[in-house]
Length: 465
Length: 99
Image 1 (cartoon, each protein chain N blue to C red):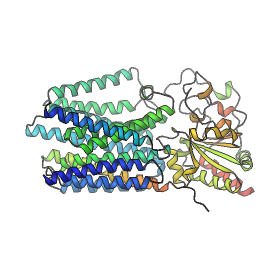
Image 2: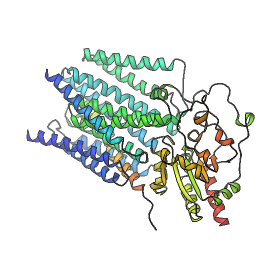
Image 3: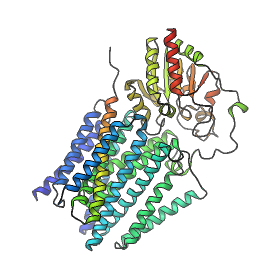
């Protein structure tokens, strides 16, 4: 009895420490301390569990945790920051895997012992395994898309949404049947198998730039699966952590969708950017040609600038240009130019992606500004330097009602006195739409790899200084 | 009310209140820290380790032990890896140092 009380007190303390830990993340100053609290919470939860009377032997727990901890530490210390989205998707996969294996093992054990799971247990176990399994394969798909193993563009086929809804309905039907007949072993495994398929099939039609929303959603599923485990095992710390995790993923996903002026449903089932309607209009053939500039011309503009706002996008991550950006900013600063950074909420492939990359390059975080903080400043700024961003600075979102991104909040880079755009080529961005910014008279396009171009700027500025 | 109903209702209370607290707390995390936030919630969701450990160490037959051990490995990968990478990221966030 006293042990049980101690275990529950451990779980309660852990829950409180997790909440305090997340609260610490409300500010960069307190964030590390918050994480320390969460770590203590996790340690308490583990100690409490080890004392439980259901645990008879420790050797396999030890084996599993040593392997997991070793691999986890190694990956986390060695992975480059540009691969953070992949890292997160990968660990969602493992979270889903762990949860569904726990569910399967519980179910298997009950069948083996001839126990009948009550309605709550079987319902919770069913949802746990289904959510866990679809998080597992869905996250692996997302990982594959981010990593380039599978094509990043949306993959669609006719009747795809009907097919997906059919799959989901069939799975829910199987879970329903299982609730009525908990001993239907075949139905249980069929539901697992269908859930594995759903994970793949839900992520297939989603394109690279919509990944932030998908990653958030998978985060949310992983949390809900953990909560379901808590219901099945009557364990409150699992329910609480699952709710925190599920809620966090959901809120972030909502924020991302809102930042694209689209609904969740549109992101998930819209196959955005898959097939641009009608023949692709060529910028050069129909409108004014983009104003291409040489490195030297652009460097002259930079030399004269007294204020500059950098607008990073996924292109900065791809070419790993964050360090080069920082070096350029240092030279410009010596030259008397004020440098700020404007971060669009959906720039990159996951929430906060650009912030982490710039932090890695030692850019102080008080120079990073959110869209609503900085958008009014562009008009009083000499130069906006757009590094591998496209749709988030496309003025069509403000003016062109027929544009697919109309209504999306964008950064007003076009309002700066001069806008220097670094881009790999003149191909349209992810949304497959042309960007009016590129043909504006005050825009200078410098084509090529962003990192090389920026280093060339720095070099030119240093030489002539 | 049956005992079953009671545990359902109790669980729903816990879930709903935790989700509400989560909403309040996470809504206050700035965009700046959203990637570390995701890594941290990832680590915290590794709490499924609690269930995995019971499966791996509960003497419930070979299948349960094997599945449990894999689950323990996957969950502890998330716990340890998640906390390590969150801290690695947070260490990089610095304010401008006055010269």
